[in-house]
Length: 113
Length: 112
Image (cartoon, rainbow over all chains, first blue to last red; front, side):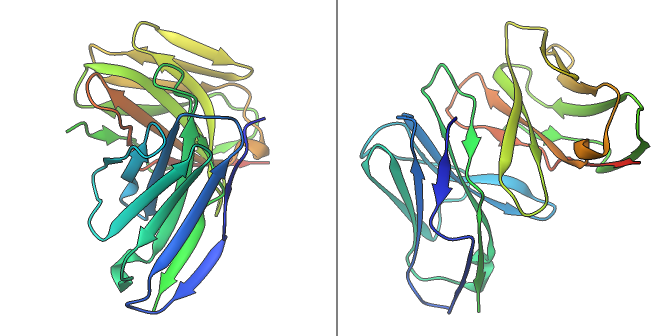
């Protein structure tokens, strides 16, 4: 079974703090994704990566950056957290560009005060 | 940009009923379409993935169909059970580009 884990289930941060969200998958998947999920807006893609050190912007990359130094780990960084980044953050992975079934982590609920 | 719509936003059915969830998308040039379920406060679980060349996929009591020309997919759930209560989302991968576009989901409640 594919397992995608996220470093925290709940986080509370202050405005202006730098925030790191970590995601790890254990099935040697090439593709990894970061989404945020907000009521009424659904899931929106922030960034994705199809290889180590490779990244592409999704629909809403502003205020975020990512890092993929190792294949199994994909980090989302909020450079200076703002209240409008309060959301549920979901990480996902898929095997490659042909076998695209996405496997999701449990999510991190972030509150920025 | 691909737009994905799921109607209704919420649905309540008695246990044992067969039901259909709908997903529509604006651009018929898709690569594949995926159905997920999400339990409250949790991540998403993949149910079925349909490639653009396929018309349907089946897994147990679930059957997903795809009609690209009309921009529609349906998820059929047979003999619904209370454990099927969850939010069901569809996601479309366009023919170009690498990302999926998600609908906002249908919240299903199966009443015992």
